[in-house]
Length: 121
Length: 109
Image 1 (cartoon, rainbow over the protein chains, first blue to last red):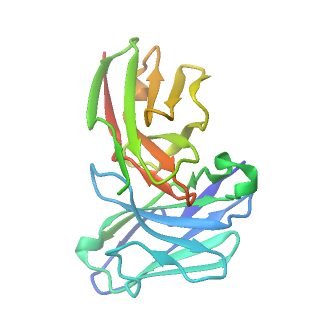
Image 2 (image 1 turned 30 degrees about the vertical axis):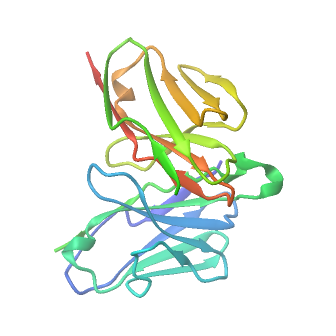
């Protein structure tokens, strides 16, 4: 159980175009989904947190107009990189959690998708 | 501020034992996670500790001391496939995961 899929796994796009990445929780309903970015040999960097049906909360320094997040259902969140530039090339990873204080901290485990390798040329 | 410290890199020999330490200072504590991340892949869950003590799971064990703000991940009988980054993450009082920078573990034959 607790499988998260991410699509596409790899994408190459031209500078100035937009790219959409989908993140789905396949066998559970995720109250919260997270989007991370990871540059080579660096740690995960949280970009934003999204709860179903509400606006995403972006981390400091992340442009919300450039990285559009939609969390339309309990099993789907999308990240759209608008007007992509070469510096946006990175490994984008989503994660999902059930997360309920009533169930204790273990329920806040994040289940990660396999990641999307974005290359902007 | 919130801070999680772990060594940047460690090297160990196949078949040996290695201990990866993690110290934390966070606003509140609701548990500590360890994740494994192979290069080019997403992190995968290894362990969760919320009470003091040692949790053993096969070749991997995780220890927590809340009074010391300290945890370690112990890997026994190291295999080449254990070469990866190991991420320590703390669930703070707002149930937000605070991530360490990760420890890259290199296994040598």
